Length: 596
Image (cartoon, rainbow, N blue to C red; front, side, top):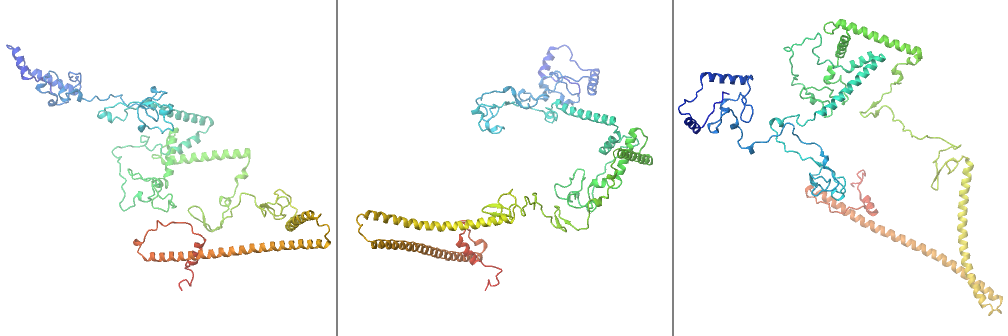
């Protein structure tokens, strides 16, 4: 930006000219132009302070002159950029400050115990209505209960952020939240130090070193500045893992979404895509990057490299790449000494406590009782061929005889009760007496049947005697009533009365027998009527079944689109006659004479 030269309007120039009549107008000399140029260069270089406008804001010295110079009608005297900004104050946006952000949580200062007019009917907060309430709908609304009034939410400010404020990822972040992560990390480090100190005190330093060696296999993968490693940025180039187009894509080997994960960015698939298909890793042409990565001598080389790093850390001057033979010999010596120490400790324990004979066990193949019996299993683990299905054993003891019994409880049933078959006993904890108790039970059963028959006969006889006695009592009453009048009658009259009574008894017996016969005749008539009714119903069911079959044959001859719907037909369970008619009219395909 060139030095700002004031551009005054014509009226001001004429006025200033009239005031300075007689004095020549001031002109910049060559020295003034040179000083202005040097000042501009110093401002651009940052050695001189920037120009300041009338509001106290710095003006960027790199702004070109056609932007920084104001038109003549603005009446500007010093440097300014006011002409580049909106002139009306209401159009200028009041942008949010750096620390302004939305308030989180609820306003606990607005807690109240009474429902306020215009508040949410569900929770009682004033800042929203019932339809916008995010709380679970209450059984009794806060408007009616007045209990558990929810606090009001904060009224969030209308932030007007500029370009940088909208894209500031840390705006609104509370730095105190990071203190929790720092405290957790410090606790983990303190625990590690305590474990290491315990290992040193107990003498388990080697075992701890081995655990760290096993757990931190990829510890030094990205460590390029270790001794003996040459790093050249010109030689370290990245080659894309491009595949041949004739090969099958990795993500097409197994389309199951739960199979091995395929990373499209690096075009890598770590796990075996055929893991759950039953195929071994040696049988497929691709088993994932991890299979290739850890196949062959890769794991041995990684263990040798870790051993070299641990040895170098312990103070032994060895490097796997520079001195591979030395590193291998040191590793062999280390492993040998370690095995010697382990065997010596084992021998000392066996000498002190004994039990060496328990370690001399037969081979594992003999312990598992392997046989040459051929068995095939399904994928679910069930036996499909070879071995018979094992018998399912009950969780209860079977064939256990108690109290001298020869059969189990529940082998005998009588009158709704369980018992023992060997002695017919119906008491569970009873002692078995054998065939004697059987005979007693049979005698009881026979005596009970005889007693029942006797009771029936006696009841019939008593009924007849009661009828006779009733008649006799009536006759005796009549005789006693007529006795004073017929004292002069002879014994012949008595014999006649006896014959008359006997005739009455015989007549009653005959009438009783006739009534039984009539009842039997009525039963026979009713049964014959029922059979006739059943036959009639069966004939009606056969006719309706024939009509149905004719309707079915007619519908089957029609085209499928022309068949009517049967959605309005009432569906109910068939009765006995309809079922019988269906079975009589049903055509059996297996019958050889069905079509003749």
